[in-house]
Image (cartoon, rainbow, N blue to C red; front, side, top):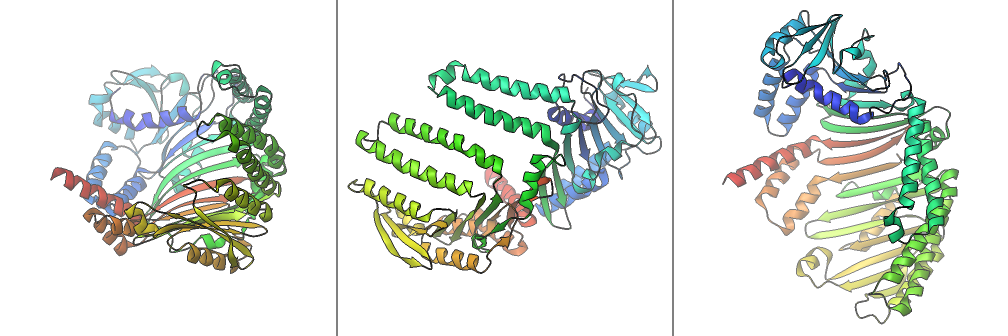
Length: 549
């Protein structure tokens, strides 16, 4: 059916069907297993107006709002729209619902008569509408319900908007999957299919050609299968929502996940609510990119790390043996280095805590970067560095390395320098590439670029000023303005100059990714500030003008 009404409903139906696979149910459950929410038309159009104005496309936004308002004549524009899925007769039918004004249905049928055709009475107050393809609609109270079969339009909720909870107030568009409302038999079937799929792969020609260690692969398969089964069994809800907030001047995408109360999964998630870092210095306000991640490793994860690390060792060893460009007399030494590295990594994870981060500082014709974090065996890392230097000595392209080049607090510094043949690269990295390895008893950092040592000191000083700082499990910040200014310093593009001017006037130039933990939940938010939206709009317009010229 080609109709404006269907254009509004099909995305709802499609989103729900993607979130909840059909035709697999083995038992009935009267609770919805999935809902899709769309904020009220009034609020959505206002938010679209804001975002198009911020992007410099105000006229286009006004035109879209005018046509959308006309096409939704008869709708109650103050209430949300949505859809839900309830298992019924071994199937997962999706039912959409639209709030209507008094006499709203008759108005909708008149406005879209050319597309909807003449309604046909299907009995029990249900109408069949459409031309090429039909759907069934039913008016109940102040709502119109829509489904692909009339059997789905029975036992309808009096207030379907209540099924959406707070989603319409938080997001313009959102979807939620209630995992525990999915029939248990279906969940068991999904788990069985996943396990069977893994077994099939182990027996497949592709796996045999890869010459994998079957016993090891089976052990890893058991671990992965158990994790998937735990996830499906102990999860509660999963949702994703996209929203525009004119007051906060940003657009967001949230991905949320929660576990059943009292489960081991819930306990793991709760453990991340009290996370602290000793590397807060990575979050430099002037940097173009910053990231900090900290967390606690559960006992279950620590127990599983051994088989995973063993697999890594064997895979790397095989790749080294098969690498034609590595001399045969060097392979065992390289394997030894990799094993030492994995030992340190395994010990660090076994300590039950992760903590670290990174930063990239961009200035006109200058790049500096740093990364690092917590380790449990600094002397082992120094031993690995020394062995790597000994192994590389004599190779014509091996860089110059100065071990024990100095101290910075309790950190030993080791410096690597290498010539930079490319002229453009020298402009931003310096005459020679310099990388500093800073190793302490329980810290390891790597800094490089034009101001490697200065950046290292700045991060260490800022970290020391805020020890054991409470932080979210993960946060990442990308600042558009320093990136664009750096780009302009190496390529004087007039389009970039215009974007810089726009951001300098408006500010709010950040894209942020933030992970937050709750008592039994985790939410990851991607936030795009107004200045970035404006810059994108300016860039699109400028690019369009350039193409027309």
